[in-house]
Length: 190
Image (cartoon, rainbow, N blue to C red; front, side, top):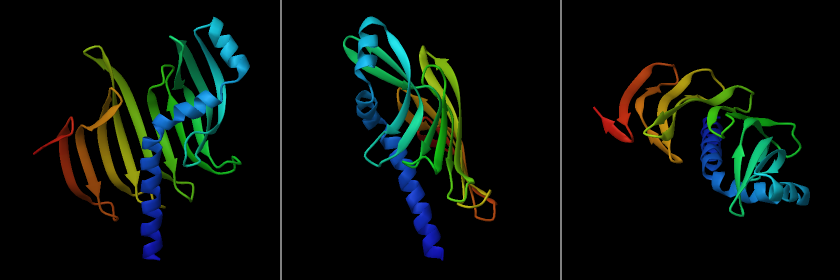
């Protein structure tokens, strides 16, 4: 039984890593979703919002939600806006929900456990520092199948890169605070 829990936890971690690393490949799937009518519209207009429903990477993740498409200099720029859901291909299983603002910046995300509880929950605040958009995000990781927090972390997302920033707290399976680390832009401070 313990091995199964470790295997399930490992599988979730792999899924989360794949979610994060797959973003670059999403563009090819978004581009394939553009119809001739969409391309004709974009040849005369700067942008459109279309409902996307389909596969977004090699891992066979299926997402649906509003897709903002800009055409500049003959290229398409895609931004996920509004509420997105990751589901099984047939749509019967819900794996994650993600909310983006009108510019495509992450607002919040929930990744669900097999029992329907929340494994990982992220909330972000957007700020502008030195004319750069920066997201400050807090992520809470739960032990699978429980409401016991495993880790609370803070990150700064700047220029498409994520940096550990602020207080990181680690908890035991009993919910006791075990360790605290402080970071400033990926550098640990003690």
